View 1 (cartoon, rainbow, N blue to C red):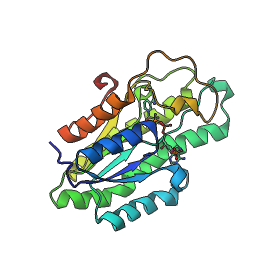
View 2 (tube, helix red, strand yellow):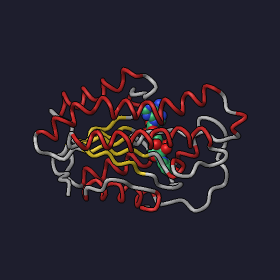
View 3 (cartoon, rainbow, N blue to C red):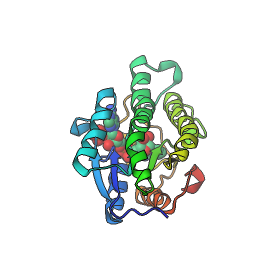
View 4 (tube, rainbow, N blue to C red):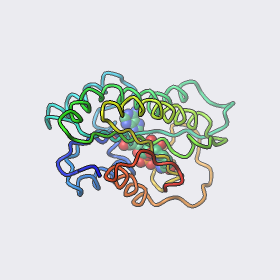
Length: 217
Ligand SMILES: NC(=O)c1ccc[n+]([C@@H]2O[C@H](COP(=O)([O-])OP(=O)(O)OC[C@H]3O[C@@H](n4cnc5c(N)ncnc54)[C@H](OP(=O)(O)O)[C@@H]3O)[C@@H](O)[C@H]2O)c1
């Protein structure tokens, strides 16, 4: 079990459908939650923003015990029609931004581990990292890249007492697919309930789970 009471957790993408719910549930479990989102000036496409948000959280709350990366963008359309700028944004927001967050948060989380807490990182890649989808080729690739990084980094971070969990839910009923950076969403089947997806993620954090594959949702 990981004690959430008093844990300082930075939620990136806290304005989103899943990020807002995860942040609220963490707070109701007693965590102290720092919220970050693009509309607050933290655009993950700008690398300097990442160190700044970690430093600001540490300066304001005195430490960092958890990081939830719930930011992300999606794009729809044929692989042959993809614009380079769309691919760049998908990878900057969904892959390299989260990778930098994982990298740059390590020193803060290592302190948390040394002080006897149980630091964690949660990423949200999605089922497309397990089963890439036609019409979502670049989105799928950006998420598979993040998921692969997490598998490898988790083995390294474990040695420092830091747990990294990648959550891979299927299509979930948030507004993500209503504001793609390119293309138009196809007709999806039934969506997962975002309240249940967020609750499953927070349960996994509290219970010390090490992975959240699509079958967990
Ligand atoms: N919904 C699904 O079906 C589903 C399924 C599996 C995985 N996921 C993943 O779960 C995560 C959350 O998805 P969601 O459904 O909650 O989406 P959402 O409601 O659209 O929220 C997306 C979040 O990402 C932030 N964001 C977007 N571009 C950003 C940028 N350049 N820099 C910093 N933050 C940025 C948004 O901030 P602003 O509001 O300020 O723009 C918002 O907080 C995403 O990574 C998504 O790929 C979603």
